[in-house]
Image (cartoon, rainbow, N blue to C red; front, side):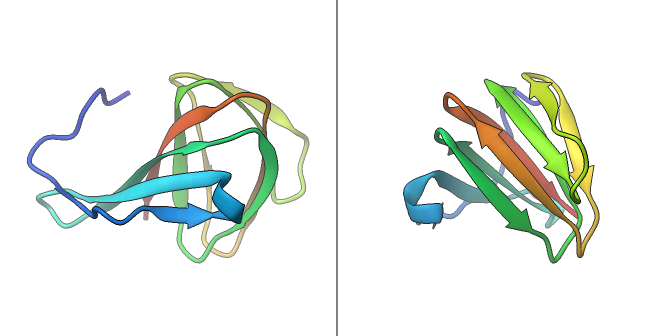
Length: 103
């Protein structure tokens, strides 16, 4: 798990979703790849994806159902992926810090 990203560009305006229950900042790496770094506050949210995403838990516990499957717990250092066109439902009981890797 990455503790930091070096030599990046960070968009200063936050991405705010679901009435503020999910807040992130987009990070662009030197190779042009994008990630977002953020926090999800206690809630249950559905994310419909247009690109493949790998979600990495930095801190906290996320309970995730992918494409209607069984809910699974993901803890710090664990990740899940969903292909473009899929979705996931995430339930968090306490703030979860995450990194989203696109593509």
